[in-house]
Amino acid sequence: MRALFVGGVVDNSEMDMEGGQPPVHYPEDTGGGHSRYRLHQIGKQADGTVAYAVYGAPDMADEEVARVADERAYARRFEAEAELFVH
Image 1 (spheres, rainbow, N blue to C red):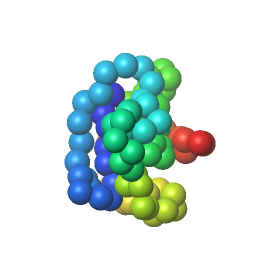
Image 2: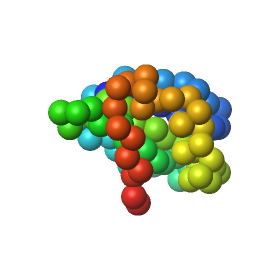
Image 3: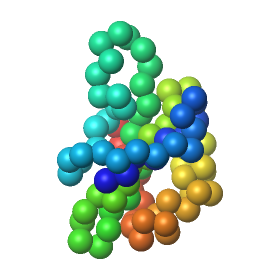
Image 4: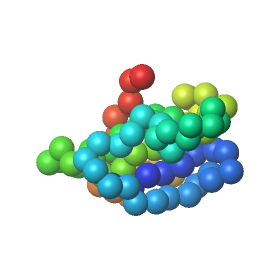
């Protein structure tokens, strides 16, 4: 699974993630009270496999993260169906 980041200091960055389900926040637990990136969108392939997860910066509106993810065409790139992650 690929983690994709929108906004903040790591905007437009990517990294590989282990596991079948992405964590709700990245990093999962800083322990320092710092704001973390929040999961906004999951891209699933036809067989149900999670291909990617889109994380938005703490100060970004949901609509803006969705707009940027659509603009960057993550679903097409990973041949997946985008699903909004409901918190």
